[in-house]
Image (cartoon, rainbow, N blue to C red):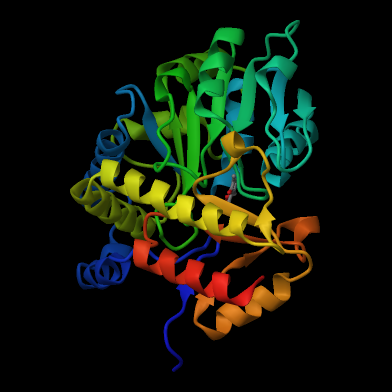
Length: 360
Ligand SMILES: *Cc1c(COP(=O)(O)O)cnc(C)c1O
């Protein structure tokens, strides 16, 4: 067996450093075999929701639903709470896919689109519409662009009647968001939580639930929707058999994060991203892809490479460090580096030193 690698890929990524131990505990306790209708499962579900609220300081009316992935949430949100009009802020592959899902499902979807590496400015948004739902991607993992947090507050004042939904898949819970201005927020566990892929978390507030209840008689949700999730949530159960093991692991990682403290996690995250960007800016042949410093993601650092992508990836790989290639059309032009809570300061310092030594 070769030595263990450190994954700086943007998801799946390195496992949170306690996951191996929790996995062994889970097997010993036979967690994968417990019924999702059992008291034991309900306790795990409730504990997970409570800890998530405590950790991130979420509003008390947020309910946590489990999906198969974040991608599933796009369809569920539309089917649960929209009759016709949606507005999408598009600045990369993930924000675009939500828009396309809405088009495919034949909603009246409009988008405001800016080139990769940018974020949609609040001034550029249409004023003559009041969409039922707005989709904004807080952290565009395909480009490393991050919507400034204050924009989410501006969105709420611009569109007081709309449901504001935030894709925080690759930034939650590291970045502190104005949760009280957000009606639905979703994430995947293989990003900042450092867990195996295969579980999405979908948080909705009372406003979102009220809107979906108005729709319920005509709503076109299929096997998962706010209605079926909510009904089972009353007993901390799920409409279908969920990934019980993943939910258990999430609850354990949340315990660890609470013990470490989110403040400390956030401080370390700022430090790690600062040294990465500092390195990229100090080099001749590589540079941050996102030019405007206000828009640079703290959790997904994307660099232009002047055709050195494969070379850099290969050389780092030989040292046991795995970074991601560019997304889609940028495959050979970028590298993408995850800065998630499991990545220690020492690991990021090592990556910075190696990169410094291998590129001009
Ligand atoms: C990874 C990612 C998704 C999709 O998550 P899945 O778990 O693959 O469904 C959506 N949005 C963003 C911003 C992401 O980074």
